[in-house]
Image 1: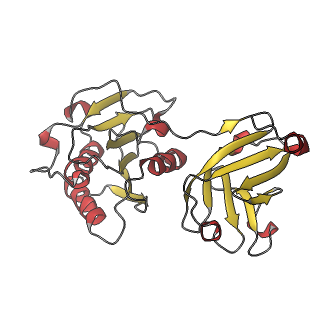
Image 2: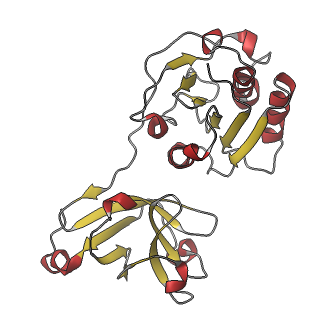
Image 3: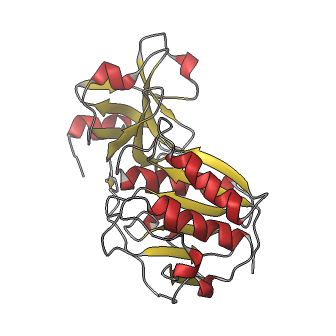
Amino acid sequence: MMKSGTIALLTDFGNEDPYVGVMKGVIATISPGTHVIDITHKIGSQDVVRAAFILSKVFHYFPSGTIFTVIVDPGVGTSRGAIVAKTRDYYFIAPDNGILSLVLAGKEISEMVEINNPKYMLAPVSDTFHGRDVFSPAAAHISSGVPLHCLGPHIQEYKKIDFPKPHVGKHLIRGRVLFADHFGNLITNIEASLLKDRKIGLVRIGGYMVHQINRSYIESVPGELLAIIGSYDTLEISISHGSAKEYLGDISGMDVEVWFGAEGIDTGVLL
């Protein structure tokens, strides 16, 4: 089996409280010397969709064998399962709430178990902090070489969520804003691959229109709304030297339309 010296953490725990530090302490106690990387702990509280999206966009930058420990868990303390999925190159540990839907989609899962063996948990297991008592110990034990079947029984299925997908038509793509990043850039679900080799007529969000997709932020003057392919390889709406989130106000679930050429705009055909 793969043996990893790297555990990558992604949570909604924030940095103000000791939760992340305690998880790292548990890992260091069980598996001294394990390299722990923080992906982010600034996922919006209980935002499973955002966590799923970010995980799916960043995992491939990590070394083979990395153990991704992903904890955004509105169902902590309920009967939802805690699972480990092993693919060819990585391990993914998470509550079974759909958070692994995107990262596992289309991948061959070589082994998947439910974590339920008390031997590999802290005791007693609290009803509110499975990150400390269940997920961190599991990651540390895997890093130390414990086979997955020791953690619990094999399972065949995991929960999937319906991730919002853009509507693709002849003349336009209609997607939506998923979230805003630290800079106020609006991250959408429109993949760059959907825009490749197509002439952009305009990008519309709310009552605003942009007539091109920038290659860089400096192509627009400060304060100007712009569209760009961002680091997630999806379309983003931004403000040159500013925050699109502040500029546009409430952006939750906001639609974004990309029109191709003049024909689609003139005819008004939507899909």
